[in-house]
Image (cartoon, rainbow, N blue to C red; front, side):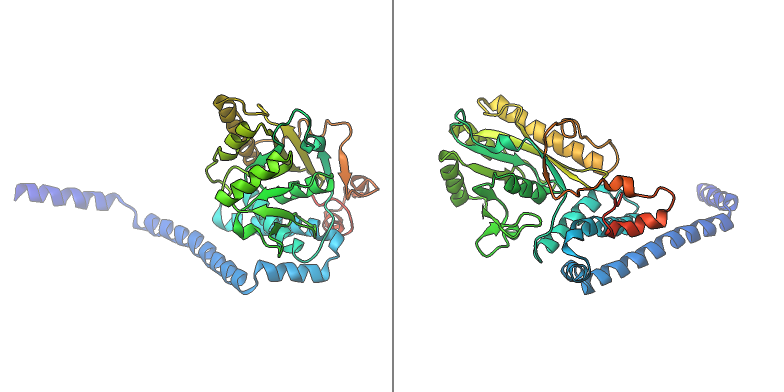
Length: 334
């Protein structure tokens, strides 16, 4: 009985030291923060179901001229990412990049549109005499991946075959549609039949584009690098960056070990590609500065869909409202 009395006495003493007013205020603050965010997020989800991204893209395309579709996609994805990141209290860089990718896919289905680009190293996609088994353009699922395919097509190096999941092969002729282009690229799904087609193209000294992972953030597989090692194909990687002035920089580079002669070479190429993906995601989240080294320093980039005038000089620095309105008048949007 004595031990029981002591136990209850300790509990009563602890309860007397607590301030019930402070506890209620804490719960009220927590509820006040949680309920509006949950309610707002539920409203956004319902609106998204009622008005799908496809309908939103059709609405934008009916109002905005095609020459401004790329800038509109950047703007709409930015606003969307700001709202969702404020509610979820998360970083918006990566989310904004993939939202922009979905906007560009939907707008591409409605017709062609220009994208301001500078392309570096496109000549590396051309097979040479030393390439015994063609060229493999490989990387991972990163934002602006289809813009990279567009850059390869416009520079005169259209891949003879691209490896893609069945969900991304949307054209009637079983092709993948690059961003803002009507013509597609012949595509094949991963598997035994796809491997046979890839080997056939490479033996004819052709160009094949692929990703080493099945989806964004997925596990990378060295299967195609092993195939490149057996056939003597050259590995080319890519980097795509949206610069602050709204111009997309696309650069192509030979891999660390272009011909994958040994297993160590394959492993080194895998690590380099994964490191490029990690660095890009850090840049999107603001954890690192944009990496344009080796891109803007190039002397003779290929230029596509750039304006004739210098739009940065037209931007008034004294009126923020004019800056917002100028996004649809050919002025910078950053």
